[in-house]
Image 1 (cartoon, helix red, strand yellow):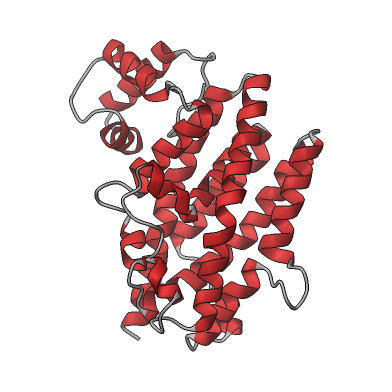
Image 2 (image 1 turned 180 degrees about the horizontal axis):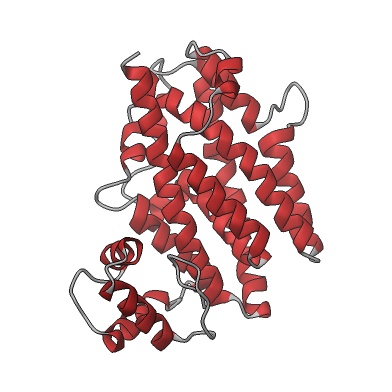
Amino acid sequence: MKCPTCGTGFDSNDFDALGKHFYAEALRSDGRHVMWLNRNITKNKTDATALSGLFERFFALGSGGLQGWVKRRFIEKFYGPRPHPFVSALQNPSRGTLLGYVVEHQHFLRQWVRSCSFIMARTDETEVVMYELDNINTEFGGAGPDRPSHYELLLRMGESLGLDRTKVLATPPLPDTKDAIRVWDDICQDYHWVEAMVAMHGLELIANRNLRKEGASVHYFDPEILKTGQVTDATKAFLREGYEADVGHSEEALDLAAKFAGRLGVVDDVQATFMRSIDAFDNYLMARLERGKQFETA
């Protein structure tokens, strides 16, 4: 088991050690650990023993297995009664919001290819290799003029909104995007490949329209904008691609990860690392909004 905040390792399922770790970090007022406790476990002051029990309940898989647990935690963080601010902004997106999406997301997609490559290089499982090859091709390679990559569709969206791709590609990431990419790079290089797989492909749940059936308060964006003239055709093409593709991508990845996590005995590490990944994703989505504000005031 790992700490979902700093990555410190403990014996498998050692919730006592995890509780003591967080209690000690809280006593010395470590901001990251205290904030994580407040957001995910409890805002009440408690001792190490009580924390251990709370952690055990938090990480209990339940009837849905690892797949269901990942979806529940993702929905809680991004699609609860108060959806993530970027998700809220995307329901009726302004030009600035969409351009912030373009500029920061191109950095994410380039990291995505690195992440998939690390996973592929570190596993001996053929079905995982084939899955990651397909992801790399879909996100970055494309399949000819009639099937452009997500990366190409993103750049075309920016161009349709008046931002030349050369300017997009020349713009460095904001600090939160850069920090998030560093987290994902560390996970994919140094952690177990199953942890990396869930850390990355679990993020595709953001556009999984089936989450509405599982408790999400809203879709990633209002699907009606795909039918109206509210956004450019290139924007529709980019949003539609993710809306249609990420259901299959995220579901297949979680099924593969659950299969091998149990077999290889890394379920608890996968859970902790996933929580670390979605914290990075939260900050990255806020960077999209921050960048968008620059275009709103330009």
